[in-house]
Image 1 (cartoon, helix red, strand yellow):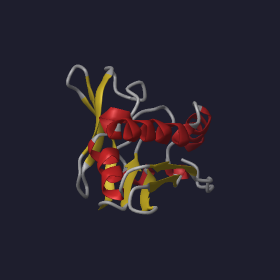
Image 2: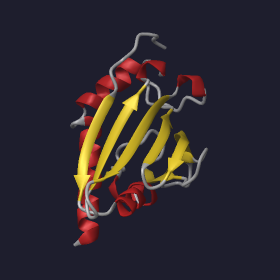
Image 3: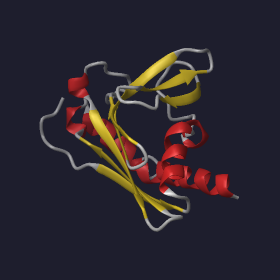
Length: 161
């Protein structure tokens, strides 16, 4: 684990729905927009799951019924804020030690009544075991968090048409 601070990874997207709906789709419908190929479990992923509460789990459920943790929910403030731990190390394995966790903060800001700005910040990457590998992979793989947020935005758009 590195002690040198790393720049956070960020992404922003604007969606044409009210803030409550933007938060709900992000959290309750994560399986509709998260790519199934982005998983760390031994089995192919059936769905990602985000338990809607403080200290809830963030994990994947495999097609074989297995579960593989990704982290925990640190802050649950619908419809404006969500903070998750990212406990996936540089070898793409779950690390159960919360001292090795980075954080993903997602903020939802109303931009009028029918539009929401969603800002994501993945910070404290230096806490991860081999955090440089994670940062490089996320930032270089198809646009990183910005690309993930675009998938989310597309799902939001399709839910309103």
